[in-house]
Length: 329
Image (cartoon, rainbow, N blue to C red; front, side):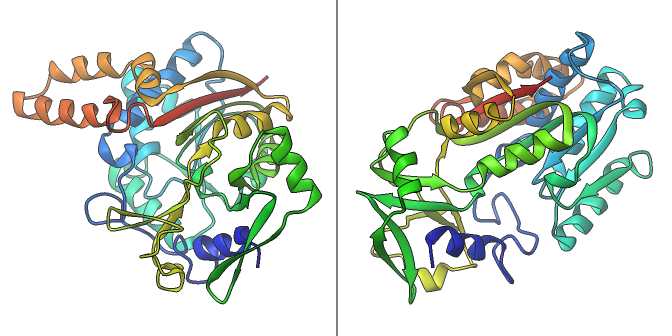
């Protein structure tokens, strides 16, 4: 089968990696910005709040997270919006795009733990199910989990008997590769469909998402497997596909140029594209930390400051992760 189908089965098939709730952080396979600091979500919410204050967003609209895991990010955003203006949690509506029932239950349990019955969450099975006039949509690390094809010198990867073999790529694939000057690397599948469905269902939209990658073609393979915070390149001799299949996470660097192109074809405009560090500072991360310091002990402040360093340090998440804000009016 083509590698994209194999990867889709790996992550989302029956007993796939994401079919059940996965721990993130020290006891999981990887860390995310959300699991690192609650101020990650607060910063994004602060950016959303500024849009609301400037009448560039709708206070009667929706705040929707895609791929919410346990719900930390959405809850951190709701908490900060309440801090900024308590009325917003009464006028805004909140949603999560999540198809796995087990994960939905974990999300609802955590949200109830944070807010009791004060916050109502609507679950959508897919982005195509969202039919609203306005939504601020946020996502962290979703595009790296879209299935991809692997292309090398005009050939595309197949998986046969748990081994990667190569055959001539289709003319459509070769045409896309030529347009983007790609000779070797990943070709994400599904970005165009995803952008189309978001554009079709949401009349006006701000979409803010973070992921690791660059806005250009690397002409090299980045696809890799994560297992208990260890990284194994897909073509590493020490990696046995059948042993990792559905058990470990598999991911690759995002080509943000491809993301932007897919959304611009659906009448979105790219508002911002920059490193995670620059984005979070622009969103007000440092000001939020300073406000926190006025009510925190020295130990609490030091702990949060250390977590924030992880988010914005160039040698950690700060430069490797990027943010893109796409808008449809």
